[in-house]
Image (cartoon, rainbow, N blue to C red; front, side, top):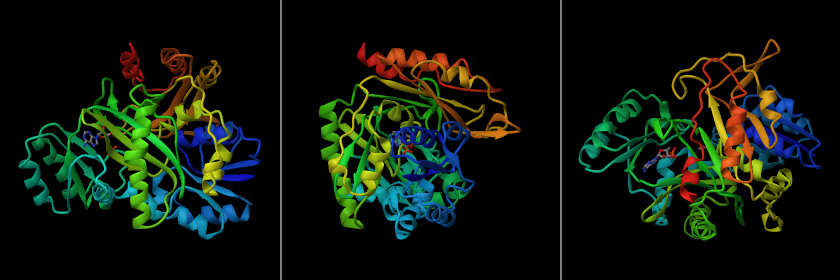
Length: 426
Ligand code: AMP
Ligand code: GLY
C-alpha cells in the first residue's frame, strides 16, 4: 500500500524508517519529509505539513490509502478531518480531538471535570488579574500559554514573583501571538517525569512502552525548556502495576470525557506525567507521538508499524498484538548552538555514515537539509542519535559513541541522557 506521512522531524524519520520495513509498504511519501527519510527510500513531496488542501489532493491523486500525521499543528488545523472527508484512512485525531493539546485551558477543564489527578489550576485572559493572582500565591507555579507554542510556552517558577515576566511576555507582548491570549496558571509539582503513549481507535486503547524525555536544554535539567533533548525506554519508575494504574485512572477517564464532549478520539494520545509523592499527575496531553520519544520507541518496536497504524485507523486495535524488544533504547538529541533561542542554519554536517555504521545505532534526521549536495543543519534540533543495547548503560555508550563521530560547527548535546534511570536501578 501507499502511505503519506506528514511532517519533517526526528519523529517522522523514525516513523518512516519503521513503516518502510513493512512488507505491506509499497511507497512511503513524506510531506515535506527530510533528507534522512529520502536516504532510507522514502519519497519526499514538496508540500508543507500544514498545507491541508495540497496534502489531501496529493493523497487522492496518488492512490494513497493511509495518511499518518506526525505533528500537532496540522491536526489542530483540521488535517485529520479533511483526510477522512476525502474517504481516506487517517492516523491522527480530528481538530476537536487535537484540542486536548492545542487548547490547554480546555484540556484542564476536561481533566477537572472527571477529577483526573493533575495540578490545581486557574485560567486567565486578563493580564492584571493573572498578575494579582500569582502575587497572592506562596508556592511555586507554572505559567502556560494555552495554545500551541512548540513546547516553549511553559514557564516553571519556583517563586511566584518569577511568573510576572513570562505573564507580561505572553499576555502583554504576545510573544506567542494568539496562543497566549489565554493562560493557565497551575501549582508547581515536583517529581520525575514520564511519558505514556497509547494508541486509540475510538473504541479500544493500547498503551505503548513508557519513556522518559529530558525537556530542559542544560545538563542536570537546568535552563530553558526545549522540545526535548533526549529520551529513553523503558522507564524503571513505570512498572506494570504503575502502567495499569495510569491506564485505569488517567487514560480511560480522559478518553471517556472526550467521548462525552465531542465523540471518539482516534490516533495517538500522549500523557505527560509527573510522579509526585501523591502519585502520578498529568502535566499535559498531546495528540501525537512525542518527539524525541518516538525515536527510542521505534527502536524497540518489533511488530509491523504500518499494520498497527492501519489497524488503528480501521478501528480494529483489539485484533492487534504489539511486540517489543526487551532491550533498552536511548536517543540523544544533537542541536544547534543557541537553541531553544535563536540559532543559525546551514552548517555542514559530517560523520553520520560512520555513526550509522555502529551496530544497533540509527541516526534520525530532524532539522537537516541538502544544499549543493551537502547535508547541512536546518533547525534547532538537528539529529536524534538512537541506540539499543542489552542494558541501558550499553545503549547509552553506543549512542554517545555515535554522537562523537558526528560534527558541525556549534553542535550541542546533553551528556546525561538516561542517567536518572541508571542511578535509580543501582
Ligand atoms: P508541558 O509543555 O506542559 O509538558 O510543560 C513542559 C515542561 O514544564 C514539563 O515537561 C515539566 O517539566 C514542566 N512543567 C509543566 N507543568 C508543570 C507543573 N505544574 N509543575 C512543575 N513542572 C511543570
Ligand atoms: N518531547 C515532548 C513532546 O513531544 O511534546
